[in-house]
Image 1 (cartoon, rainbow, N blue to C red):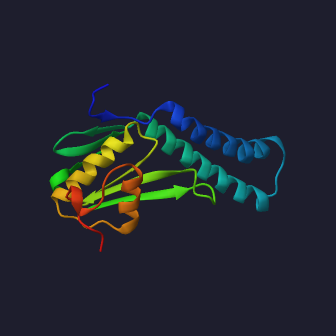
Image 2 (image 1 turned 135 degrees about the vertical axis):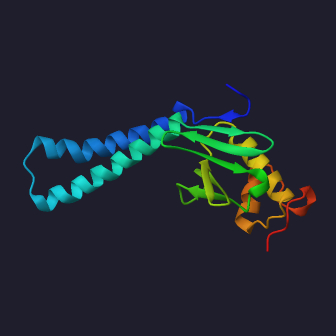
Image 3 (image 1 turned 90 degrees about the vertical axis):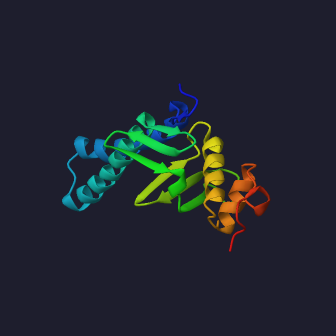
Length: 171
């Protein structure tokens, strides 16, 4: 694999595949196995549709490739390619989502925007910290202000989100 190319490893996506398969099994199998009233079938089909969309999204993540170089970040995925030049970066947010009340487990989501392009990447991406580091450096070069949550999340990754490394102080 190219050193500037990043992927979502299968091992990190297996829990999402399990959730999608479990949700589809719990909604579709009963509909196929026993007669169900329309009052129950409609919500179950709606839930099955959501699990199917989640499955498709997970497959799309698995086959996507994120290419990063000194000039841009590119997402190569089925049904569309996206490119964002670092010089055109206008927004960087790094959000943390916890799965527990104690905030011990969770994931990060990197949101990059500029010129009608928005890329969303999550911490399941291999070498995610390297992508975030490049994005933070581009944000510093572009003079972007970062919100306090983003600065805190950068610090959690060991990336200094203050003016010491050229990143603007949050408002």
